[in-house]
Length: 358
Ligand SMILES: Cc1ncc(COP(=O)(O)O)c(C=O)c1O
Image (spheres, rainbow, N blue to C red):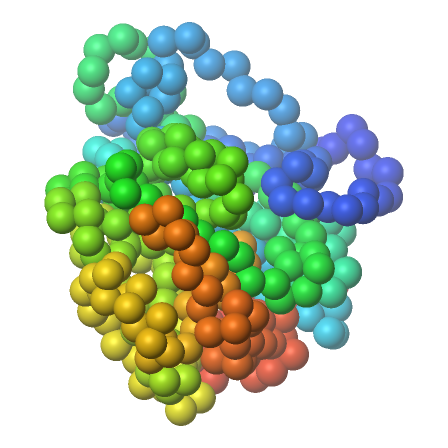
């Protein structure tokens, strides 16, 4: 892929605001690439970040044909930048594209797009501990028509945002509420795809949980409202007896997380057994209360690992162990982030080091 690089008007030194938070601070450049049926992808360009001009009938606005990804660039101790499994994001992006009847974006070009943009914007990679440069590749349907059908025009773009540490106040457990009325995704639906509508559909229950004092929703399956699926926009895992990590098996309505996949690969090397299973929420709650489950945690790019200390279920709160972060979550978080930040060797071939010095 040839990427045209346009000059920036503003070349002044980058000063990152404090606190960074998540997703609020834009960098100066955007990568865009356009698709038309019959012609394919063309016009890859990196230039100053600016607004899109889209017709009000563009299909993204009323058909919701849109997909995205999320990954991060990490500053290494030697000043270079690490990317973590961008090829896995490329592969998932294309699985999402296929499910949403959108065109494939070549995986090698996806990785090149990210590498080129991050290299140009390297000065935006935060130097603060546990902070990172978040990368958001997106594809939207751009054809102006009110017909309900797959679009013939698309825009692929990548934007970046420096993000602060997920746990600003330390590795603090979060509280989740089991959602009994609404579902995130159903069998045969789009839950496995990273498509924008899944997030819109999750907001009502998430806001209600927040008002009730929980940070996230614990989603159950759509058919029996019984089996645990995900925690908010993260995968979830349960630790039995401090030794065995059990996570819901990918059911078709669970997003296959790259963090989940990495931890399932890494945990046995740390001496933990791993298992993918159907997990009945009533059994999970009983196992937490009896002490068989010693830890619960979520897994995702944003937090990597986030311990869950409290679960709201049928109107009452169940505290996991002593409600504090446990040793397994703490160790998994440290081991994976050490690889991501280049503080430890990467025996799995997950890291791509950019030559740019930030
Ligand atoms: C619904 C959902 N589940 C799980 C995840 C975790 O996936 P990953 O580890 O690839 O960030 C995400 C984040 O992308 C998500 O949006």
